[in-house]
Image 1 (cartoon, rainbow, N blue to C red):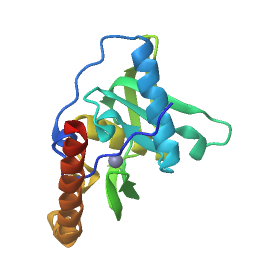
Image 2: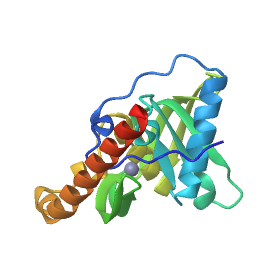
Image 3: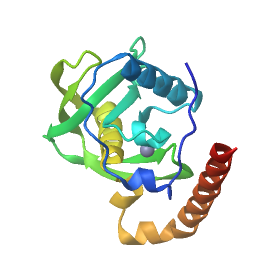
Amino acid sequence: MAVLRIRKYGDPRLRQKTKTVAAFNEELQQITADMIETMQAASGIGLAANQVGLPYALCVADFGLVKEGEKPRVFINPEILETPGSMAPHEEGCLSIPDLTDQVDRPERARLRFQDLDGTIHEQEFEGLIARVLQHEIDHLNGVFFVDRLSPVRRQFHHKKLKEIAAQAQIELLEEKKKKRK
Ligand code: ZN
């Protein structure tokens, strides 16, 4: 297993919509195991594949941080079927946007369809923090950040910090290119 580099706000891959996973093979198991290790090493509660530079529609979430005894879970090709219930604000952060948090309005419940590592299709409703985490990760898979969901006033408030993070993302991309050339 390996801890992967987490890409930051400003990295173009985080704005691209991810591709449907079609091959349920050993490589997929390796990718998701690495993603779980990366998420846990960063003390994150969720991680989308494009956050580690992989253009696939899959994410992982650490339910153990919400409910004792629960294991990290893998969601392949996840989609939101419906969001019953009301909207609620809650503080959110993101491993790709370090040191920035804000209140985000989201539906409190979400009914999802997704596949597991064997390709089996599941439908399940989630609520509370887990529903929020999964909506945040599915946003990533569609190229959306939680800061996109803030009001223009709040986005403006974070403008300078976001510009700094995007500049850092560009530096990291250049370093990666240099390493590849060697
Ligand atoms: Zn995030």
